[in-house]
Length: 118
Length: 130
Image (cartoon, rainbow over all chains, first blue to last red; front, side, top):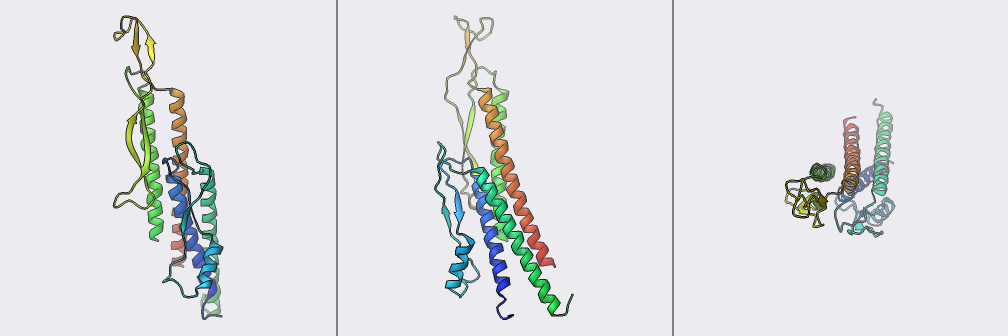
């Protein structure tokens, strides 16, 4: 069970994905008034996991995340950022991040307890 | 961790740009009655400077609204012509107030994201500390 510690890899991947998502949300909100700017989003975490499992060798620690533009109705100046949607995405990323960190922390606790250390 | 710092930089650039926009709005409102004043507008554009984080935004060039100035009838005014009219400004208070509200809303959204990123970074640090 302890040779690969899947749960740590999973939790760390989830946390990094959530951080990348939050970075993209920050970009979208900062550019909410820039003419011609299109909302960006990154690949879903399930998709990232799948492509990670397909290629078991880690791509030197980097996650296969790709940012792409979202097509949705644009305002007259070409900008299609919706502030409400971005705030929602930001909150989702925040919660996914804290969830992943909590899972990581609990797994660490279990490991420490099983080692007999407090 | 560096993507946290670049995301913070992006949110900060958004706040700076909205604050600059609000500055121009308040200039317009202050000069509503200045004869010959044309309202200032500023459009944002992506900041592609060498030390700007990817996706940062900056205010572009300030432009003057080319709409016609209002003609005000006041024969007693020192600048009135033979018909008794003089040109005021082309500032519409309703438009400026709506713009100010938009700028405030965008500023608060940027601030919220900034706070969220800061919290994520802090909890990550706390995890490392334990």
